[in-house]
Structures are given as structure tokens and as C-alpha cells.
Length: 393
Image (cartoon, rainbow, N blue to C red):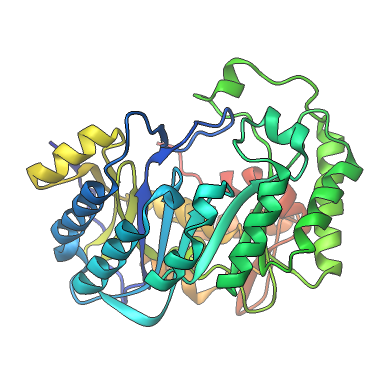
């Protein structure tokens, strides 16, 4: 039984773009740093039955998004590349049959560079996937072992070569500030990735999250804050020299190759989330509702059979909207047009003038009559900046 909490407030003048997120919760082995909703696949995997549940979940959700076009799809996990080509084709065909998917929709799938996954890349492209995001994390075999990854550097390079044979839009995930990592080693990882000619790169600082193995058993030799900051600045400079646009906190792209799906998140757009543990945000004339699906795969599958896979639905309170909006938009290095605040929240810009004036006086944002953007200091101290928009109960 899902919980529904409603807090009434004024509506929106227009609906934002709509994306679809599909969660595949299984992986071969849980990485010690991972706090995503992922579960080790034991005893085989019935991916066709899971896809049937996803499509039924989508059918149950259609009334909330009826008639709206879907601009992007992102298939995340877990490890979606564990799916069989038949399951992927069934999923995308089923989505097309149920929603109005735009002809130029960006369809991203996350993949790991293991040999069995990489061999499916051609079939995934034929099914309609047109953007691949590969979780390499490092090209250093020593670091890959520490991170609990099941691939080695040879497989990482081979997977990137094969991906770029079938896809012209490929993202590479890298991590830095790894145990005992030096600045030259972090830059070497980046150089090896750039040598492949990828169109997008995500560079993440290794963070120790609760409910992970690394949280219980912290790895030795983690770089201190100063070294981690030096790595970040050096990576950003190298990517800029290589022609990449730094458009979001951890995201870099060739011009015109920004991830459209993630941009919709960061611009406070709407997204329907299906699959175990998936989150969603749906706007209507009555306001904005956030949803979360049941996390455990067995509970999710049963909830789909019962007719409602959402464990919770909560209408976003009026006073929370400025923080929720800024939490996304201030991740963008170029900021946003001021008119977007009223368009996406239904609130007037005047309602946050006090917070904006405070942030500007402290050098955390800069603005003119059309646009607001975080300064370099605002990007470095983003949590402090966001805290200014957080209303206390």
C-alpha cells in the first residue's frame, strides 16, 4: 500500500519536458563504494519477466502523464547491460507502444566493460539505444581491484573501442581521489580515457557513503582534501584544454553532446521512474508530486501485480520548492534563465529575493536581468549556497 501525502499550493502555467527513467536493479557483484539500489544476481536472472513488470508499471502510470511526449529515456542500474538483447528490444518496443516517444529522443543505457556485456553492444544499438554510458572508473588495475570492479584495464579499453564502433555518443565514468592515488595517476586515467575519443566524460570524487562496505571498512590511503582539490582542478583544466565543456558539477561534454536526460533533471524537468527503487517527479496543474518505487525487486514485482508500484507519493510543499529548484539548477555551471524559476515552480522570483541578495553579497552567485549563475566560489561551496534556500520548519 503506497503512502500519499498532499500539501496544496498553486499550480504551474506550463508543464516541463518529460523524461523516462528505467531502473534495472541487478549486477554481478555489488561494488564496495556503491549506494545505489543494486542487488547481486544470484540463481539466474529472468530479465524478460522483469521487463514485463516494467511495462505493466508504465501502463499503470500513464494517467499521470497522458498525452505528454517523452524526450529522453535513461536505463540505469545496477548493470542494465546484463540484460539480453531480446529483453532490451522488448523493453524499448513496449515503451514506444505505450507513450509518445519523440523521434529524436535520446536513449541512454548504462553498461559495464565486462566482456559478456560488451559483446551485446551491437544488438543494443539495433534495438534503439543511441547513447552508451560505460562505468570504467579507472584504467589502473590496482585501483580497479581496490574498487571491487570485475573488469580489468584491458577489458576497459576493449569495451570503449567496441562501444565507439556502434555508438557515436559515448560517456565514460571516471573516479578520482582513490586510495593512495597520486595526481599524475589521476591525470593518466583521464588521458587514457580521452585517447578513445569519447563525447562525454563524468568525473566523480570517490565519496564514502553510508550503507556501503567502504563506510564500514574505510579504505586506507584516501587523499586529503587539498590533494583531492588539486586533482579536481587539474582534471578540469585538462578537459578544458581538450575541448570539453564543463556544464555540470561532475559532467563534461564535447560541444552539443551534453546529456539531455540529465540536463532535464538539473533544469527541474519532469521524469517518470519505473523499476525497483526508481524515483519520479511529475508536475500537474495542482503542483509537483515525487514518487518512489519499492526498492527490493521481489516487493516491487508484487506491487506491480497489485496495481501500484509506488511505495510513496508526496506532493512537494510550497516552501520546499525554492530549495528543490536550486538544488538542481545550481549544479549547472552556466546557471539558468531567471524566468525558469517561475515556470518550473509556480512561484514568483520576488519570493526568494532575500536569499538571492544574501548569496550575491557573499560572492556565491552572479546575476543580471536575464540569468543567474553560481560563481566559482559558489560551485566550490555549493552546500553552503543551497542552505540559503532551505526553509526551516
